Amino acid sequence: MKYIDEFRDGDLARQIGARIAAEAHPDRSYSFMEFCGGHTHAISRYGVLELLPPNVRMIHGPGCPVCVLPIGRIDLAIRLALERGAIVCTYGDTMRVPASDSLSLIKAKARGGDIRMVYSAADAMAIARANPQREVVFFAIGFETTTPPTALAIRDAAREGLSNFSVLCCHVLTPSAITHILESPEVRQLGTVPIDGFIGPAHVSIVIGSAPYDHFAEEYRKPVVIAGFEPLDVMQAILMLVRQVNEGRAHVENEFTRAVTPEGNLKAQALVSEVFELRPSFEWRGLGEVPYSALKIRETFAAFDAERRFDLSYTPVADNKACECGAILRGVKKPTDCKIFGTVCTPENPVGSCMVSSEGACAAHYTYGRFRDIPIVPAAATEEVTP
Ligand code: SF4
Image (tube, rainbow, N blue to C red; front, side, top):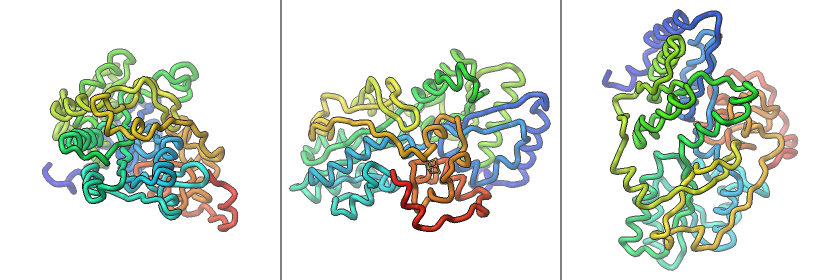
């Protein structure tokens, strides 16, 4: 197949769905986690669940970059803008994630903070060049996909001597999060989140390759199928997982061969390891502190590290009590389990991070789900729940 619409062919999707239904044993259930928010979005948008038999269940994972960003990290960025006078640059979705004191970056901008939406770290560098008298901080978030461009910006800034540019680094790592989920009580002891296999991320795997997932197949006996983001990719990956489970196999298979290799992008990996090193621990929204799950800027590039430059210290902040994002990101609950889903909490008025980005489980369910019969609560009621 050459063109994108071929990967969205409804007839083919139904044929794969029929194959899944034929091969899934009716006397057992299959639970697969799609780690990545891109897959969550595709599953909701294209109605993939409706093509699956009832005994094949998909569980949303924590692979949505803005969803896992804890409130305390957004607070740091807001304080840089409001209290330290820095120009803070970040990606669009990050601007709307709820933070402390009923703020978000976009609300902090309305209070006078110089906060700008950018499409890349290179855009933030351009702003730094254009404003040599101001401190410019790039609030860098995301998984392994967005890390190499941040590394490149830091290395280029060092070469160029761009002394008013720095990065608030919140880049996180996929394999550590999968390990954390597999080691969680819900999966390991309680069995409340049965996981028979994973759909592995698409874009992340282009960078890191398929090899890092071998550990999950070998040590945890969980099959992994790396899949592209189109609906046929996802359907095919589910079929491949069903077959592995039926055959008692636990291997890493690559459905996304048009872009992913076993070794990944070695140049990007070398660049990332030149600029970043592992953090001993990092707080994820929903998962708590996860060891060796994020990156920090190496000492060699300390001048471009906003945490060192502004002497920032991290303070954890609890999520809104009404919000179930934490449980959703661990696969323990579904968006519709949240009492304020689609009523108080909507994409226009997100109470939690999972309702912000189109990759967030709550936003995907709200946008593409069948929830139009949920009564809309009066505006006054929305004021009772604030982060
Ligand atoms: S619906 Fe809103 S408040 Fe509820 S879990 Fe999702 S993001 Fe959090």
